[in-house]
Length: 145
Image (cartoon, one colour):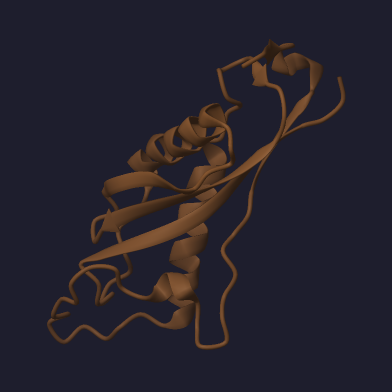
């Protein structure tokens, strides 16, 4: 793996893409863990669930840094990270769901999710899932030399 110039040269760009919704509702809104009794609290609306997902994606975007700190790894890649949260927003696990082909990019994508996880909020009140899994693509690219 080749390390290249410092970020001050503006060579790299990291991007995060939100998962698309399907016609039957967003796939990220389905439970991955046990369904829990909400105790009479109404389930959140799709709007509340979408807002929660956007908040999670926003936290990940805020914690993106280029691989290797101030250095860049040559090339580009797109890693899909699958991670699971409990009802309180605690990260239970994070793993590579689809590799970019670069071990460095894959490791950094998982690190990004782990760094952001300290700020993940709890699920909306009444959310019926005990835990929720997300699959989030994280893209790395290098521009100019």
